[in-house]
Structures are given as C-alpha cells and as structure tokens.
Figure 1 (cartoon, rainbow, N blue to C red):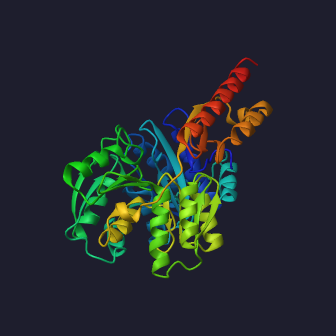
Figure 2 (figure 1 turned 90 degrees about the horizontal axis):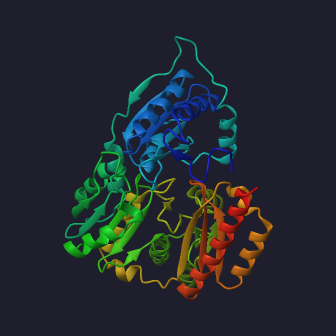
Figure 3 (figure 1 turned 90 degrees about the vertical axis):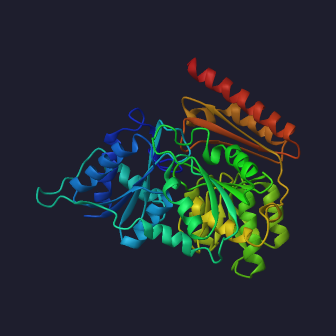
Length: 436
C-alpha cells in the first residue's frame, strides 16, 4: 500500500488530516501521470466536498488538464462518466460511509477502475513538486452535460417492469438521493424514501448502510417488498427483505451467483470475496458448484482479482458489490436494481435464505498501526486466539487510524471472546508504546 492512499483513497478529517493542499497536489500530480489529462470530478454532499473539488480542479487546470465537474453524483457514476467521456482519470471526493467531518479522495483510471498501487505511488512522488502550465495553456473547467445518462444506464440494467412492487430506500443523506428514487420510479415501482438531505452535516448520521435498522423499520411500516440502504457515496448496499431480515454483501453475492448459475450465465463458476466473507456463504456457494476466491479487504483488490480470474461477481460483506457485466466498480444503486429484478419473481427472504456463521467485528484506535501490529507478543496472542475460532483476521484499517478485529466461530460467544482477547492485547501493546 502506498503511503498516502489507503484501501480506498486518501482519507482524513477535513482541514485536519486532509487539507486543500493535498487535494491540489493530487490534482496536479495527475498532470504528471499524463500530460494535459481530462478528469471527471464527482463528490458527495459533505460540507467540505465543495472545497476539495475546487482544490483538485485547481491542481488539474494549473497543470494544463481539463476538468469535467459532475457535481454530486455516486462514486460509480464518476467511473461511468470517465468511460463515457473518454476521460483519462476520475476523482471522487467522498469518505464513503465515514461521518461528515471526514472526507476522501479516490482516483479512477481511464477504464473506470480504481488507480493501481503502482500509479498511486508514482502520483505521491509529485505531491511536493508542482507542475505548472504556461499562462495561455492552463486547463479549462466545465460542467457535466448530461447527468441523466447515468440514470438511463441504471434503468437499462433492469430487464423487467417493477410495476406493482414497493421499495423502501435510505439514501444516507448522500449522493444516492439524486438518483435512486427516480430509477425505481421509472421502472414502475412505488418508493418510500428517507435520508435525502443535502445539508452536508448529516451524511451517514444514523442512516444508510451502516444503520440498516432505519430502512428495516420503513419496510415494516409501509409493507414494502424490500428495503435498500446506501452509504454516502452510494457504492455500498445493505438490503432488507420483506420480513425485516437483513441481507448483507455476503448474502447478495450468493443470491446473484445462484441466479446466474441457474441461467447458465456464470461463465467460470467463481465469485470473488474477501477475508471477511462468511464461511456460511462459502459453503452455500460450494453447494451450487461455485468456488470462492478470497482477497484482502478493499474493493479495489476485489476488482483486481475479478479482472485476473474473469469472475463476473465480486464484493465485500459491507455491501460493495461489483457486477463486471455492467460496471467496473461497486455500485449500490445498480446492485439494488438487479436485486429488485429478481424480487419481481421471488421474495427476497427466500432468495437470501442462507445460513451464515456468527461473526464479531471490533475496531480499536491506535497511534501507530504498523508498530502495534509488529509487536511480537501481540502476534503470539493473536495466534493463541486463532486456535479457538473458525477464522480470525486482525488488520490495520486502510481508511481510519484503527486496527480492525474480525472473528468467526460456530457460536457468537466464542467469536466475541476471541475479539476481546485480541483487543486487550492491542490495548496493552499501545500502552507500552505510549510509555516509550
């Protein structure tokens, strides 16, 4: 992993860890990766997103590149418009599921795929050495001409009418608010919507993919056929069936694999997941005759493995789902549309009837992720905890100053005990580091 880019771009608290100077440097660095590039910029509703958009755009245009401003659009829409306009790069200004005070900078290449680590490292080398064009050769800034092209695309991905169906949508007060409801209404469905604020201070706040209880309540209240919760930049989806049962990314992978397998359109009988993909999902896939390939956490790693293996379906438990027949990156609205297509024939509770193993996840904030995880005594304690569970993953977050702990076991109590054991050890290691 490069120094500044995590698993999903450069992240931090706006005007503290992440500043306009970094945004300018990133935009300008793209002009070193390719001369006079054309760059699409998209952003979410955060208060700081306008500031970062202007800074990125200034970095690009001062280096001789041209900017197409997409405004507030989902992350996947930025990738879509990179391909549609023949742009060289796309920049998304969003911290995805993180709270409003955070923001981030994600970069797509000309194919609409997350920038590879090699290119990220090259870009970082130019962060302190700006490249300025001549006074009469600075780049230009223009708005995106037709945002509705993305809406048209999403509608075209559904092969059936959704007339007679009702869906509850939680747009997380983010980028999905300007697109999701219109897509479902154009497909004939009735919608009940929440989380469509655009004030910028309440994005992901008690709503969206991290708080699916909100859409669950809406489904029960309105009798909807399903509920769909997006995150701030709409690249994640957590669904809720008609009974209120949650359908996470692991179950969604299985639903799509089963559908494609039955129609004989799953070409290589493989699906890409991550180290967090539930063992229950892996067993369900195996029963279908589908092999699960695991990657590191991060949708860009999932996308890389899909491209290498030829897989058509990949994703994370958190709800990043990539359907390579339609898109190059995770797209929460697309995922919900394709689920709705299946719900037109069968209830989601039946489609997603998959037994998953109990899992426990926790995060612990630390000052130095690398040093803590390099502690020999901690590694020994992790090995001891791993012996008691089916799977245990301890890793540094790529987006926050925390270490994430994941355990999976036949009982939730066993998984929780393993997580608490590792948390205590990390706290002790962090305390020892602070005392140095």
